Image (cartoon, rainbow, N blue to C red; front, side):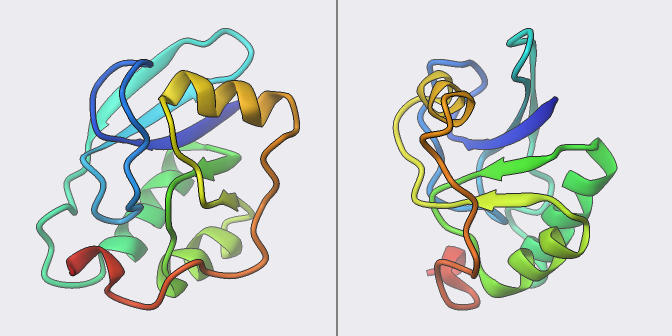
Length: 121
């Protein structure tokens, strides 16, 4: 199963980025094999709609969950519509986040964790 973790770097020892739509990188990780792909976030400098674009990209990549520090309402709605679980409040390294997710320690959110335009501040 593939999940996405927002990242500040390009490897499993990188820190989780606290933003979803404006994170530095998306780390797509297969939780069974720990194979991963680091993808530059093309929406990081968008004037608006970064969370929606990022959510649509997650759907295209076929991820089942997104782990991040925070997720705004537009991104949350986009991800939820695509049946992708959102787990916010995540910190530490990418590898630690994946391990916590695999162990069941991290649970999906029922709503956005921040207001609109959080990542622009």
